Amino acid sequence: MTLEIIPVTGLPEFSEGDNIPAILSGPLRAMGLRTGDVVVVTQKVVSKAEGRVVPSGHGQRDALIAQETRRVVARKGNILIAETRHGFVCANAGVDESNVAAGMASLLPEDPDASAQRIGHGLLDLTGVEVAVVITDTFGRPWRNGLVNVAIGCAGMPSVVDLRGSVDAGGRVLEATIVALADEIAAASGLAMGKADGVPAVVLRGMEMPELPHGTAEDLVRPSGEDMFRNSPLTSISARRTIRSFGPDSVPREAIEQAVRAACTAPAPHHSRPWLFVAVDSAAARRALVSAMAAAWRLDLESDGVPAGTIDHRLARSDTLLGTAPSLMVPLVRTGGSTTYPDTRRSEAEREMFLLSAGAAIENLLLALHAEGLASAWISSTLFCKEEVRQALTLEGGWLPMGAIAIGWPPCDQPAPRPRLDLTDFLMYR
Image 1: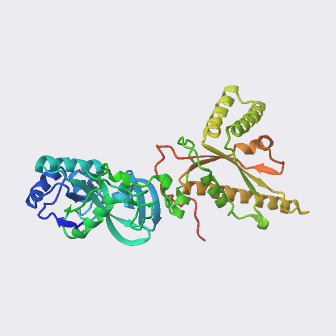
Image 2: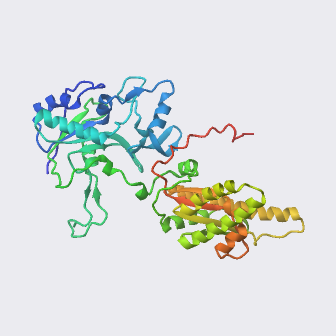
Image 3: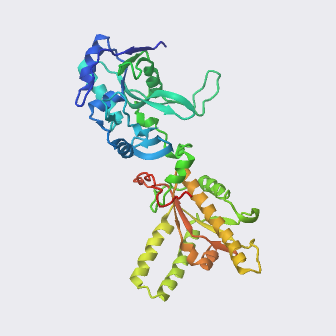
């Protein structure tokens, strides 16, 4: 197979409202556009034509980045890596001030796959030639220096080619090979249209397309559950928040076990690990725990004179979280290893060390769950009915329940990224 990468030259500066197929069709006809060619267009052209170039001066750039960000992946100094609403992970959520007028910034197209499809259909109407279309942008990559062109929009061709199950040249069965065909075409096109060359489109010719269903650039986005590098460690810590509603999917035991391993790295007194994490994953165990806790709370609230309607409301709200979260965990601590001193103040301080270590272990657990893409909520409920919790979980008396943790996948309408915290009230230098 021999490939040609042919620059489309003589194109004007694009602006809002321009008809991209109409502008491309003349030069493409002149160069002899053929069925099977791939027309590759830069994101900047599409964004300009679709009115996605906006003012960025007077501090508006940060607001634009926040607007385009669905999730902050990593932050270091002034460098921000973010996931866009499309699922792309890139610098500044795709907000780019290059190759646009001063004081302006381009945003990624609202739906690059739909844009690619419109360009392909328009070119077919105007030239009579059926072509594939790829829209590209330059992204950085983890672990490697430099930028490469990747596909953010694709139409008229397979975007990924799954070779799993086929045989390589040595006769071995391929088990994990999935080729990002649209990205390979985008990267090749970048050789003929550098940022400073003024070439916003090329034709790639000679590609032998596999006979597979056509795909989109969205197919190239790795699902969150398969993303092993979803957050940088520091971002994962600062982005974690309490979430009290969850998606319906179950939580794999492997994720729970990974989080407990992280919890067990917390500091603890006397080289101990005085914690226990009880995953309440069977329906029977969940019912027994929630019922025992509800009965204890009702007695306490009634003795405090709380009206019956208020009691029912509080118990229903708690039951919704504890009873319906995909996974429920009860963390416990044992202070039996603490030293008893004649001075009661020292003895109390010794006991507090164990309680503080339990808090550190719980925080480690919550952060590890977040790093795995899971949502969680720590609630203090079990602290108010310790004996009932121990009985429901069939634990000996030395264990102290330290709240409960509801765990699950984030809901589809997950909250916006946590804003960067102003440290004025929380940090002091001396």
